[in-house]
Image (cartoon, rainbow, N blue to C red):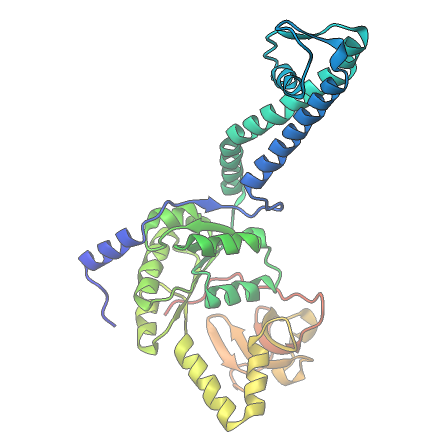
Length: 365
């Protein structure tokens, strides 16, 4: 694989340079213009009601300019009264008009001001509240999962991880597309808009405090750059990356990835298996889809299983992880299961069942 030169990398970074915005998920998603429009509609309704009340009792009002109170005069009086301008050219003269002002017009005036002032204060304090949320989010974010690229691969990967019990609050998505990050925020994930090959973008995602990093970019060279940057910022995180071409997998491992998945060759092997045996292909697809049917999971050995062979375990054991070695179920080196071992098994997914995730860093070769 040929990586772009320094100048090409700089040009690519400039093309994808965007404001590094952090978007946190919201429980109530309503457009700000819609909120303002609602409040303005309520304010106009209050104005109309006030004007109609004044016009209905127009004989009790005195106009210093002379003549009776028309509908336009009623709206004029309602406007200057609710806005507390109060020119005094139209005033309530009769007792009924003054009583109406005390009991009806004044509460409407207060309601009108609350609506307008509340909208203004909300607009002014929105940025402050957002900054407070970001500060609080960064201070509480620990041992989270960073997903670089929220396309088909990244979305499927994080859904699989969340199916094991990972909370959405512990996931941060990084993608250069604002629309993609908006979609991630709508699903409940925090998102960073920016180019993940730049260290300042990954720092905003708190990569240095992350436990695991999933790299699912569209280009292999981008995956290499992101892996190098992420490994430089966090030496202990588990980094899993996806590449399109199998020949680029060794380069990803040299860049610091603990595990590399070749998407193109994996899909090709699944296609070939489905041609040779459609039933076997269906079983493999079932294993890949987390949360339904058969699942391939990793779990620790329980005390009741210590001293047994893999064939004597109730679950269907595929492999045994002992130390830094992954041994096949029929490997003579396994002997008897030990308490420190972990099992990779095939189980049938049941509602509410969760699997203990492997939080140890993978051995680097």
